[in-house]
Length: 292
Image (cartoon, rainbow, N blue to C red; front, side):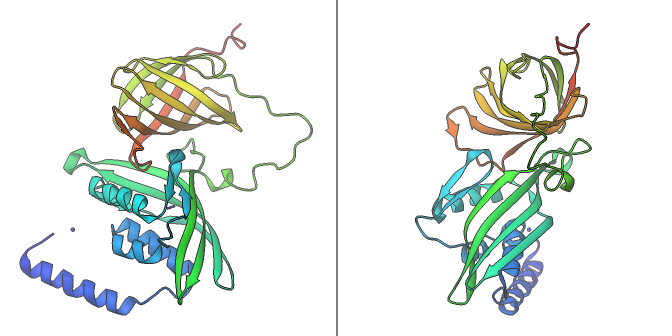
């Protein structure tokens, strides 16, 4: 998208919770329904998510990392796993626009899906800058989410979150007849996995493909456009793979962004929100074309 104490404290929490449920009622409009769904996700409230999402067997939705959901049960299993794995979830909405026509509504939304994993001093915080679109329908007086699509926003070089200016008017829909030059990313790169402070080197060709010095790793670039660099990674040493998305600096010597898992050993279809972490790349050697 797209908690303990003594018996006395627990009883008080239950009483407050029942009072809240009794007084909350159904969302009065589609925007309220969307915000309630996001809040339920952050609060690990699966019953509320279930109530506000349609369970039609043929509904298709998409998440990051190419993940596809058909119907409710598959998504429900993944959310249960996410709620178990994440110690805490925060999902601030940075932008939300909703349009309504009769019993149908559609929306665009940007949010920062923030998950905390681990305990105490070992807690790891990662942020997924997401963009979402979706369709809702009013059924028997209740607004429910039918289908949705979720993708990463461009990573901002100043930090792990995307800049709003990169997602809208700054992109030209027409050009002056000359296609922008594709950055030459060939050469040697120093790579830092920010959260775990792992460092290694990658040696890439002009297409952005090549090995890196971590568990027999290899990068494969799938797309470079408007400084947005996307691709996949594979590590034969520990038998795992995933994807990455970084944003190149203006001079092409640095890149910052995020990476994630798609497979670990025999485990496939890893929930995209089980995020790997943040990247910071620095070019060590210039591209051959620029070397004089």
